Length: 168
Image 1 (cartoon, helix red, strand yellow):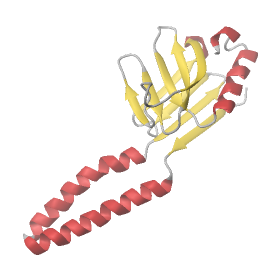
Image 2: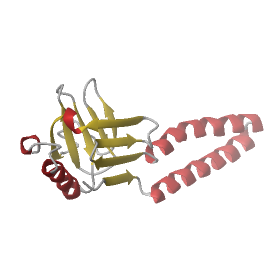
Image 3: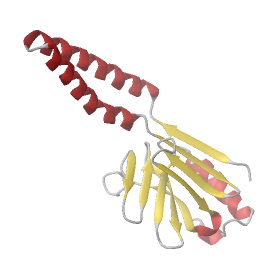
Image 4: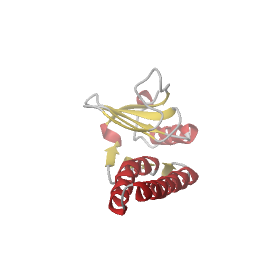
């Protein structure tokens, strides 16, 4: 089986725009506070604003990488800093491509949702690979290429990694 790798990340223009907006707001805040109060208060205000906007920048810099190969399914979320996981083919009870609505299902349009036993990893879109494990836990990996992922699941059936009953 040839490996399939999909990397999803936000549009770099969005990240650059958020960084530029953060810098502009900090400069404006510094000038506004420095002329009215003091220079030290302006520095403190800018640092406070920077601390507020850094999590937003990190939110937009997230990345999801999914790799399907002979060994199983690997994925990393946020460049492997937050989540790095490998699932063997033997551990998968069934897998299917699912389409979800962010308003009616628990999957959000983007981000990381950690529950007690079930986890959802998406960057954007409404299509994902739902993998149910043998112990009834599941996780959903968002994908922008559902047809290619489905083909890889069919290749896993052809190479006897999964059975036809395990793919929906």
